[in-house]
Amino acid sequence: MLTCKDASVLLSQAQDRPLGLRLRLFLQLHLLICRGCSNFNRQLALIRAAVRRVRDDV
Image (cartoon, rainbow, N blue to C red; front, side):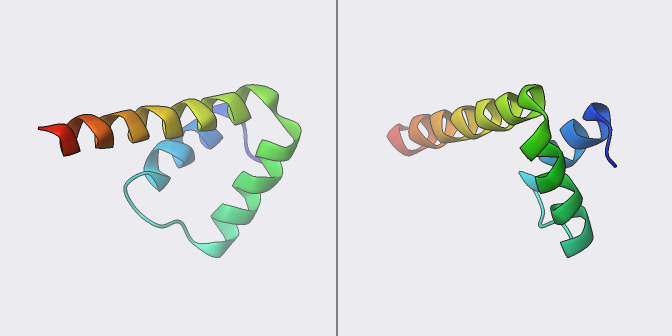
């Protein structure tokens, strides 16, 4: 089982590179049971979308 620290590192890494199947499964399982990490994942997605919008407007 992943810790929240492990999950947050993997979520950050997943923004830059694809994760292997095993890591993706462990991460998805953790996100199903951890509200804090699920929120962090949504925040990362919002930040990434905002940066894309700013980049596209420049």
